[in-house]
Amino acid sequence: MNRRHLLSSADLSREETEAILTTAASMHDVQRREVKKLPTLRGRTVINLFFEDSTRTRSSFEIAGKWMSADTINLSGKGSSTSKGESLRDTVLTICAMSVDALVIRHSSSGACHQVAGWVDASVINAGDGTHEHPTQALLDAYTLRQRLGGSLDGRHIVIVGDLAHSRVFRSNVITLGRLGARVTVVAPPTLMPSGIGDWSRAEGFATSWDLDRTLYAADPPDAVMMLRVQRERMTGGFFPTEREYSDGYGLTRERLERLYAVAPEIPILHPGPMNRGLEISAEAADATSSLILDQVSAGVAVRMAVLYHLLAGGEGEGAVA
Ligand code: NCD
Image (cartoon, rainbow, N blue to C red; front, side, top):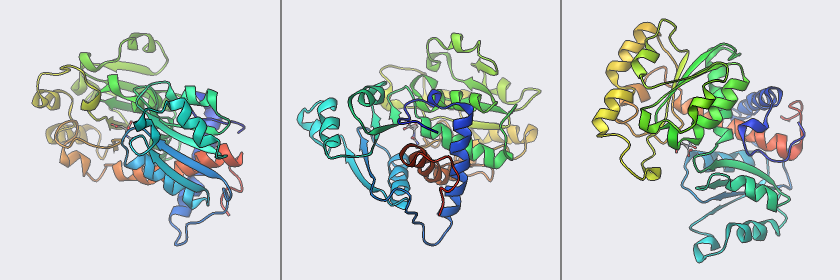
């Protein structure tokens, strides 16, 4: 794979997506070793530049870099000179003047990572830009699903439920899961359905619904269900009447989980985190035996190691793990 940036899931062909997932599997083995250090990125410098809060994504990129012997540094919007009024362009040019090899960026503006990629020589990895995309999350979700569903996602039916309007995770997942041959149905109340989604619906294997129960208990039940967080911090108005009503209509409640298990026993449950327990997902669903939520976190490190490897070491998968 000969690529410098990872800005959108659409940057990756099916072959490239699969190559990253294959490398991630080798990296996942490293994670189980007592000594988790590979020399692969020795001498490379990776800066994690996060202008939005993060627990999973930032720490997993940092761990991924460290386990491959890169020098990793974390900078947050609040702790950097952007809080003194420095522009994004000046900030990234300043950082890149220190000869860094990769910038992992999270920013509240959709398209920020694309812009940065036009300004710097370093590799740019999108760790979430506004409501646009989050390609490494989609890769780790696909990796987790492939592990649980036994390899290929061809023809598998994945249901994604929740605050689609504000979700970069859903946008990247639709692309990556589609690339891997899965069918995707997205479910949200009309107020949280992104505008223009009608155009997407013409894509093969993609469907939308306002009715979660009808989607879940259809004659052809899904192979996995992914719940998304209600992103209150991005909401400017009232998108649903009350939390109770949202949960009744669109939450994976205990009652809904029991009914779902009756038609699809032990169906895998995903959530990118952070979760609003009791709103989009009940404690029973989050902690269910078929919940993959912590598997997703674990896969996050392996997938980010694989992405750094492919972008910075230019590898094809073989020889990634010493
Ligand atoms: C997501 C994000 O930040 O886009 N979380 C994550 O990266 N694990 C989803 C969210 O914030 O709800």
